[in-house]
Image (cartoon, rainbow, N blue to C red; front, side, top):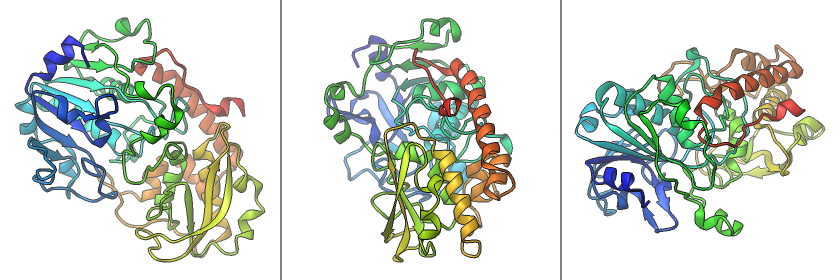
Length: 417
């Protein structure tokens, strides 16, 4: 990070939105250890070190004092919906806010909404505050899935306009929010060193968006695949490895059901089931269920130690990716509907309050689309939902170009299937 502009900004009165993924393998340090002017750390759901499970409110201001962090720490996930917004007083006394945060490429992952809300708060309460965004790669890659979220389904697990799997890097995601919110505060982006910048980037964006010298968090990993995998930092407790972001765009829908999505096990989202999934032959005979393109299912039994079906044996499946293109969302909606139809008296939709920002049922917020909900409830054919998602993904591919920093191309696999 030897860029002079970056150094100058670092010496200002600074805040930092981050969690433990802000660790640099080149230096062995966290971002909050290297910014000279740092006086305040903001952190998202799960805590600064992702030590808390989902939907656990964090309000202890002295939580990290004993860890050796002497600057003020501010949770952006507490007991009330207002906790999701940074206190205006915590922004107004800052000169610059750094953002160094890892997303996993799906709109339900709450860090994206935390980012959007922070940009909105700066616009409203601290319009002269500079933001420095340290880009991080999207571990789910350039593939896109799903449909853009209508406003009526928006909540803390979904920002209006984002599809289920967006295909953007973290800084590109910031540009999405910046443009959607019509922001105009100074935004500095430190891009990834390993990627070529769009030749028209400067002319495509206003002058208050500037690129700094690039920096590559994965520079030391580029020639060593084993090292790259060993240095993957799970951004939250239930994203344990690099396969999870490819499965999560579809399997997160299981949160809206009484099926275990594997929380309480070492393979969340990769494995799923329930005590009532018996006999397995009801599903084993369905090739589209068991051998969907890009994945194969292996029948298993597992015992969640917490969350749904705690301490009860679940019968279910583990998803094994084959290395070929895989559309998690389509596979998951097919699996959920199949289980719902084969176990009509045992399968249930999750009831009750689910997430900040909406009173709708969990499955409504997660699916975020009336046609997907119709498919899940048996009202339309699989061909219809597949064609609809193909069209939706093509519309998003046309829109997302305006948020792109790099020359690389996003894609939908439904255009070729």
